[in-house]
Length: 503
Ligand SMILES: [Mn+2]
Image (cartoon, rainbow, N blue to C red; front, side):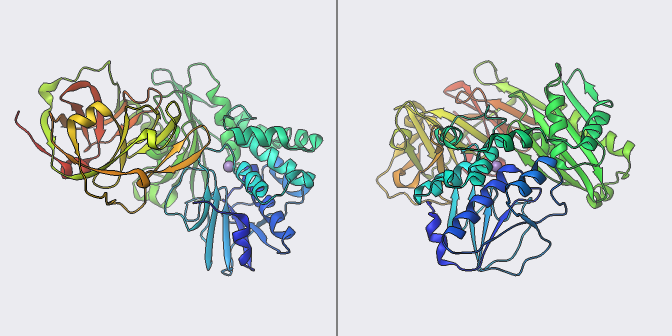
């Protein structure tokens, strides 16, 4: 997947769309893309949907002062080409508009099937950086237009916590190269809140609840833009003793909330998903996330749609999250094997890749497993398994050799979407299939496993910073030949691929 902007010029009627509740990065990306088209003699529209018009002061100023002209729309007659920027078509925060063709330019994790015309660089700090590079690839210098350079710089700045979360070379390039309008950026930066929003934040912060045992905080805020919820939660997280928090407000149609976490034991995106389970949706990043609970679903669940009942519900969900998750650190945990039964893998044709075929030894790659992402340093001894359903996970060469036998058969991938890993240093996606070889499971010593009755977070031998999540019904597994190697197997995969084994 590598999209060039010039490939999009074969279309004539073009609409650029960013996510609902646009942020600075979304505005900047669409702005730069529309500028590109206008240079090619094509007039594109730049729009966003959703119930709310941009309210946050810095974004209103940015949209007006830089002449971005992003329009809020309710409906759209299907254009020839719809390009989503800073988001992916089909996502829950992207109002679905019809289009004859769809393209995607983004920097978030891939969330579903991508159209053929897409460029997603998941490890980039901002979509502004993606646009900066795509323009450069067309021989266009962003500094030809001061407003474009200013928008892209500010988009990157706001998406990376004032550049503090920057680590990729291209992000640094944009930061250092952009010749931006300093007074404009200073103005935006100091217009983050309106006076009413400052009062809403102040009022909200007077009524914080902190659970000292579980180290979380809860705040209900008044009516405000969802970005303000984020600002309040950022501030709340700074408090000593608060390592995760949720800030919400009650809207006529449902409850909007923002989640933060500064500890590796709590992924903000997972906590947001837990709070919203069955009642709406939640997600985001490890540190910052958010979500929405739909009023009709809340009422249907028997919860009164009023302050007190909602507060009790949110507190209950938070307590449940912390009380029902067990944290396991591989290597420190000693499994009580009397609770486990022994299993071995059925004989299957599987695939594997040697990590060194994908990236230089020493480089760090991100492997997206079913139970969570792991960052792994490439060595001669790292292999990546491609399991029966096409999902992937890392395995050491020694364990691979004990459990699998190489086969001469050509490898046929069983899944729908070809798997990738990401080279973290450059944010590049590396497809596995060109290097995949066939192997057959030989059983080996097998594993000890037991069905989970609660949620388990496992910091495996592979990654001490990010956990695998196991849910009730999944299986906790320990390798029989190395009981310190503990992990989670998703229920369906376990039932499909393992059988009882008497040694
Ligand atoms: Mn962004």
